[in-house]
View 1 (cartoon, each protein chain N blue to C red):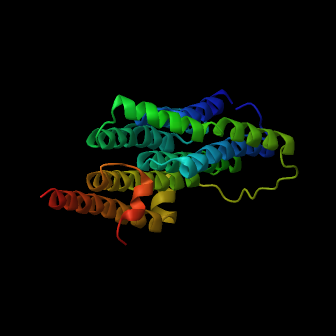
View 2 (cartoon, one colour; view 1 turned 180 degrees about the vertical axis):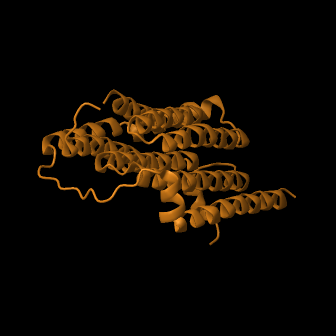
Length: 160
Length: 107
């Protein structure tokens, strides 16, 4: 419960944080706490992926993107944060209202879940049961790499 | 995790998933920064990941949900990398990451 609350607070900090860099750090904290939750729920492989990829790699990608774009002046930041404050001020209210509605509705009763046959080996699931997913992942990674190459090539031509 | 009743566990994890989804959707709707929109999408994916893992724990099928979560993480990374590339090219064209300026683009 403490971890879930911490993760939600980190997510709110991510959304409401003034600078993009702080938002990125907030996202990394959210990911790190989520990976602890995933580990505690008995999914260590997914936790390792979440921690290394989402907390590490994605943060690096975000920071690189932020550093490749022009930083704002102090005046711009003050002006933007004033406007942002106006737009984001309703978020805590909306979240509190949602939490109130959830608490009021209470836990669903008589929930029946189909337990079925359970497989405990992730490799077995990935390579035997979800082969199409693996194929899709490979295509996605190639598409991602090619997409980045095309985007940066266009940028070079534009600069010329 | 203290409660052992599946309904109660699903209720707790479902509640926090909804809160994360609300925060993500709100950020996505309200923000004007391209990168912040990507961060909002990331939060939405985190909410889905949390729910997947919770359901795997409750139903006793953690291997299946782990496989799905790994797929989700791969998709997430590709989305972020491509979005980062698009953000940089948008910035080179418009000198800003304001998504309202994207309306002026051709296509």
